[in-house]
Amino acid sequence: MTDDTTYQALAEALVRVSDTAIMRSFLTDLCTPAELRALSERWHVAKLLQDGQMSYRDINAETGVSTTTIGRVARFLRDEPHGGYRALFEIMETDRD
Image (cartoon, rainbow, N blue to C red):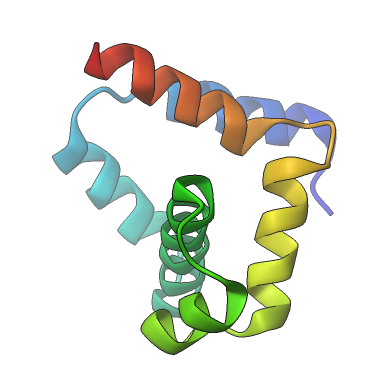
């Protein structure tokens, strides 16, 4: 696991990027294709869960993401104290208004 200082530095770098093209380039440089796929899948699952219209089985059928991963995303979305998914959804909702 990365030490907290390094993790904080990465978070600070990510917050500074406001251009989608630059962020895509950075993520491509930073992550392997498998890591990008996993991150993208988790974000897609989080959005589907946030909408609340689909069961885990339906999400699995639509996305191919395992029910284990769907359950993990759901746990972090609803139960874990970090609140990262929830915070980003709130920011995106505020930006839409």
